[in-house]
Length: 79
Image 1 (tube, rainbow, N blue to C red):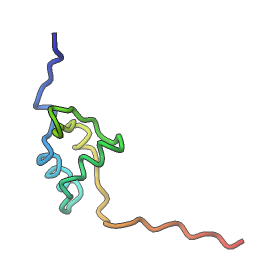
Image 2: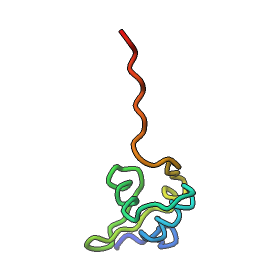
Image 3: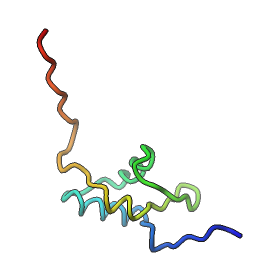
């Protein structure tokens, strides 16, 4: 018997982007959920060629930094 899923536990890409934007307090790029999935930060479910669903619990708990761009490197100590 095929494994059953409950769609109420998953976000589409648009829903995930909206939720991540709310968590961050700024607009988030529509490709960001895919990047998080690629890095193993959130669980996904493949539903077809190029289509994924994103686990709600992972998205709801993920907070994107409010700062944009590269993070500053720590200063090197003088020898």
